[in-house]
Image (tube, rainbow, N blue to C red; front, side, top):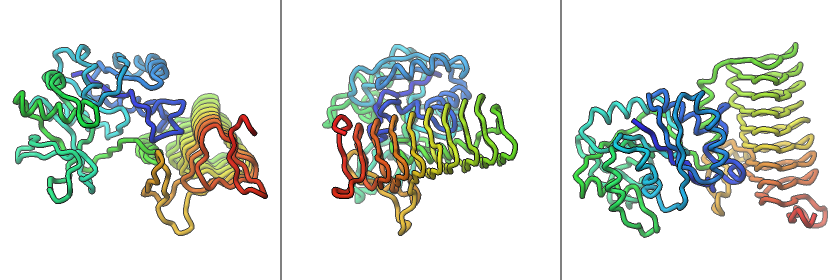
Length: 431
């Protein structure tokens, strides 16, 4: 059994987080998202894995060339030159797969690691050419819905069916197992109205024209997330933190309290008066404290400084400074960000309603009562700033002192408060 992971996408809905880092390398519980999946595949006995890469691929290749031996797998790479749909992307793996069966999955998924063993065993016992994982959803009209016969085999695939058709609520969960016969079906697949080669069309060709059976496996009571929105990173990190082990490799001064499973990397110094509650991950060569309060489910990557500040349920990427009298809750802060003294992040509306976030120009309900800020890389925030719930600050932007950020700030902007004009946004070159 081999594995193919589609990891070429740009992750536009996650911007500005993905402005300088590909989605597969976003850190969760101390390691990149993709590494958690590769480790799970390795534990399921899969040693040969192909990564189909594209956006910022050199960063993916560089990281995993160094990590593959540690993970116990043989990694190969193919660059996806054109983005013409999932079937087209899967077709890149034909020579790698050869005559073997293979597992194929999207690189932005995170699922319980035990799932891979279960579906490999089920596929091996089934008389089928393929297996598709399925998930029960509350709004089937927004998904591709899979219909099964009484024996659990796929009979029909319907894209975003009207509710009145009553075709059930089993949606594609994005992990498949196939024999090489799927490539003949891909060869027969025609462009869809979206101008893409759809993998669901290939599966229907496999069933209807080539006589192959595809069995469905419904995920029940298992963690599953297709990480495409910023707040889903917080959910995924929280899930992975449940399995973190206590490991203190840095220097911890006197009068520091560490409660629960906390990982502290080499070269990190935790100064007197600090209180760290697990589960929590702090990387290498960080300076924490004095008198820092790090609350559960926080990730602080390498080379960060957190001073007399409070961090709660947040992702803090490398080389970021949160030094003096700051509060950061339920937020994602990218690399090389600096918060001025006294900066506070709001993460709860006064009416305690769900927080909405603009994603690609549309206002999306996060479904969360608590959500702070999403900050791109290389952002500088002046002293005594306030950032309101769910606001995004684009990469390389600067926030002037004493400013309330109550709207999204695009990339490469200077955003500040003027007593005559209110909040002002200017291109940095005109500052």
